[in-house]
Length: 164
View 1: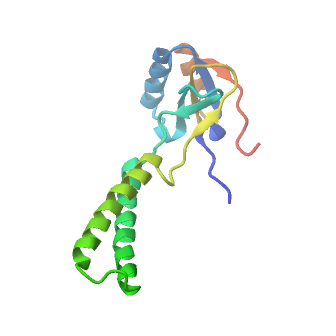
View 2 (view 1 turned 120 degrees about the horizontal axis):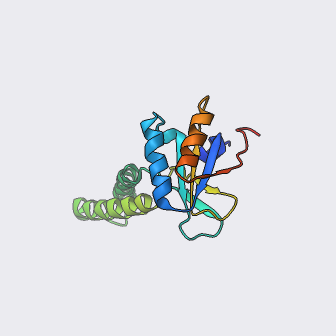
């Protein structure tokens, strides 16, 4: 099963920044130039050695939490139905189904919401010891992007062309 390329893998320009301020200014300028967040990676080091996390990555935890709640509730109610079919429970099925359904909603919603299930994490191992890195899928605007990043204090990083 192939996974879609991350922003770092699709990037044609990358720069390291020593300060968050410089990276923030470069990000704002890139947005003003018309680059959407889907083409910009803004990485920082959360404390894991060698790994950086994309601040702009879409994690959709709310959607995962709602999906987990629905699935958890269905499992809770289905469990009561199964117990009834097996003859283990024969009284007040509505109350038991409601109780296990609610427990399933909370448990499933919390579990999937915290995990952010089925959501691509755009983490990357980035060379060097930079605190902040911006990557850009620049298309034909590589020169403009490089100048913007340099002007804001970025130091260019080597990038591997997509697919290479």
